[in-house]
Length: 394
Image (tube, rainbow, N blue to C red; front, side, top):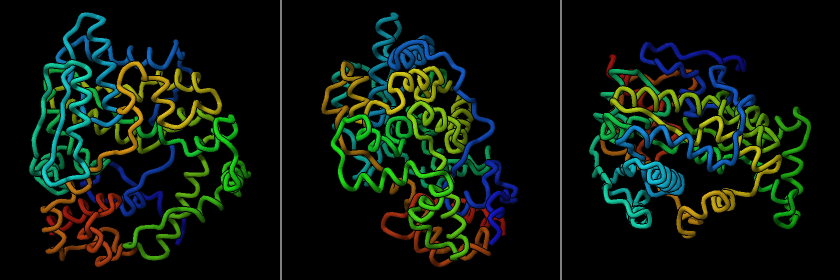
């Protein structure tokens, strides 16, 4: 299979997102997007926390300010910072916006949420109970599809109930926290080089992987690429492995360069475009402080070439005065896959007899089996929505 194949754009009329064929069939985006701003020339202007506060000032100064709040570390930090800025500047407290699902035990965060809200002494808290149809092919997605076509990420429509609740105000979202605080694969190795932890024999392999010449790194990363989707024919799996290898090998070796790089990644650009479009349509104004250019530059200068440790250490150092230590040091994280692969998806999958997107490389029955599995892979979500579209068009 010609490797140029994955650069072609899938031609279905509903593909307003401009996803490549490889992105469609694998549910995975990679590479730098030319539309992304380059933060290289941005003045860091002080410490990272001060930069985040400046980014949040615009949100709290035009109340009501709503903060998408799951109870996880990222949303808790933004809620705490927004509260501090609002009270210091004399504005109304921000309002946490929380969505809760029934029958999704791995998404249960109510105790963590209550801890944070009580700690911050917030009186107003808007909780949206089970939204029945945030399923990947449910009513919320179909409403979004009519306005925007296919979007990336495929579950972005799940934010619509929160965005509509923020109508007339600011909508603060914690997208970027995972990438910024936990996305750098060289963080553990940097701990060794900076002598924050002892060298272990298994670190030799990691050192070779990280510091080999570029051609060797691409080969190593291709061989170590995660097991491809079972619905792809072998030739497509090989192309995907090569693509992943190239993407992983391109990750910068220094912390400041990683932050610059991840802001320009295609997944980041597509996510922010979708968030902005949905929030604007809902009648609110989006704020995504973790992607603020000044914050990223400040964070890079603060951490230096080797960064300042892993996620827990970094968040503790930056935000230790904002939240209780058990919140900042928690090791659990909520997951909402079952909320999106719900009964509408399973009903569609069971009765699906329509055409397969990209039939030359996608196998029908392995794909159906993935959708009907106990915990479906998120990477199959775009194909699910594309298949729904094709089935409806026939």
